[in-house]
Every structure is written in structure tokens, then in C-alpha cells.
Length: 148
Image 1 (cartoon, helix red, strand yellow):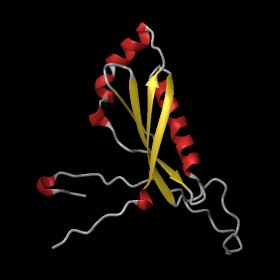
Image 2 (cartoon, helix red, strand yellow):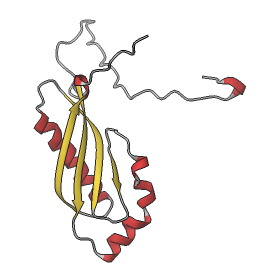
Image 3 (cartoon, rainbow, N blue to C red):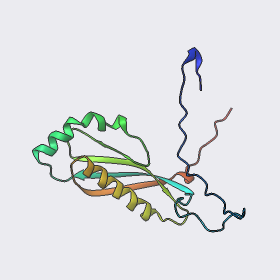
């Protein structure tokens, strides 16, 4: 896509798995392809709050060195999730979007989010405790139309 002034912008599309090839007899197979994940019908935004487990001096120094990267202004709801924390290194917040099927209960979704949060905090070189979570089913959000 070319913008004004000759600048170009890339359009990023989500990855979509390729459709399975039809059988050689030309008929469509009724069997699902196990390599293609089932389509999700819902998504939840989940906020996981927790406390850092006691930190040693090395862990504290490493977290403080990267604190600007994990400021609240960097927070995003993504499937990978984002961790934010303050320089006090007492608590953290993890935000993520969890895809789910219509059959998934909220506690299952929150469990997935908490596992993602735990892995993200371990990835920072720390451990966690006292997790609490809140989720929002994105289908339940109502958008009011503005009056004219």
C-alpha cells in the first residue's frame, strides 16, 4: 500500500493455516485435519495481578534494568501477553487475550491466563505468588451508538 508522499505501509494479516487439500477423488473429506487448530468462537481479555516472590540482589538488578520496557504505558492485550511492573518490584500485572471455544468455562480461561503469566514472570528471571485474575468476555461488551 502506498501512502501520500510515496511512503509505503505494510498491512499485517493474521496467520491463517492453509486449507487441507481435497482427497484425490475430488470429494471433500468429512474428517477434520488434526494439524489445523479448531476455530475459536470467543475471546477473553484477562488481567492477572500478582506479587513477585522474594527477589535476590541479582534478580532485583535484572528487573530494574528492564523496568522501562515493562512500564504501564507498554501494556497491551495480546495472545502472548504483556507484563508490567513498577520499580518497587512488589507487584506485577499481566494482560492477555485468551481465545476460547463456546464450551470453555471462565475458570478454564483464567487458568490458561495464569499459566501464561507465571511463564512470563519466570522468563524475566523471577517467580510469583498471590495471583488473582479478572476476565471479560469480549462478546459481552456492548457499544452504545452515539446520538446525532
